[in-house]
Image 1: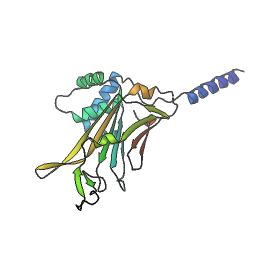
Image 2: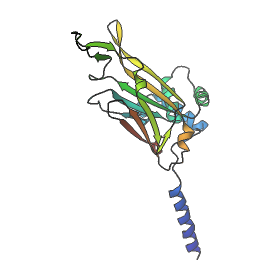
Image 3: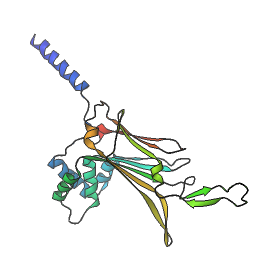
Image 4: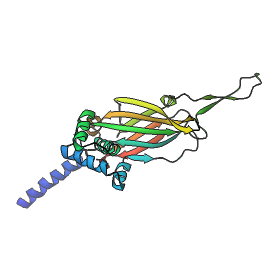
Length: 225
C-alpha cells in the first residue's frame, strides 16, 4: 500500500515536470553568475569564443539581394561575457556587477546586413523614355535598413522591442570610405521572453526584405544561459 502511494506521488510529480514550461535562461543573474561571466570574458581565448558563438548564427551568402550575414541573440549572461571581453585594462569584477545593474535584464538582438553584387551601395536608375541618355546611378541612402522589418518571436508570440537602432557600415578605400551594409540592434525586456506563457523554448528572428525572400533564423532558448 505504501509502495503504491509512493508510485502515485512520483507519477504526479513527473506529470507536473512535463507540464511546466522550461525556463529559457536565468534572470536575474546572481552575483556569482555575473562574476563568472566576467572571468569568462576576460579569458579572451577559444573557450570564450566557443561560448559566444552559441548565441550567433552565420548565414550563407544569398543568391540575390542584401545578405543577412550574422544574427546575434545575447542574453543578459552572454552580454556580461561580451562586455568583459571587450574591456581589459582597469575593468574589474566590481565594474561588471555595476554594468549589469545599470543595463538590467535585457536581450540584445544584433543583425548584420552586407551588400552584394546585386544589392550594393549604388542604385541603378533607368533612363527616362525618349531622353536618349544612358542609365545612371545614385548612392543608396545610409538608412536603407529602415525599409526592412525585424521581428522576434518567442514561440508563437511576437515580442516588441524597447529600442531599435541602426547604422551603416563602411570600408576604407583609398582616401575615402565605401558603405558596405548596416548593423541593426534591437533591445528587448528579457522578462517578456523568459516569462512568456508559451511552453516552447524556440525563438525565431524574422527579417522581411522588400522584393526578396524572407530570412528566418532560429534559436533554442533552453540551450542558452
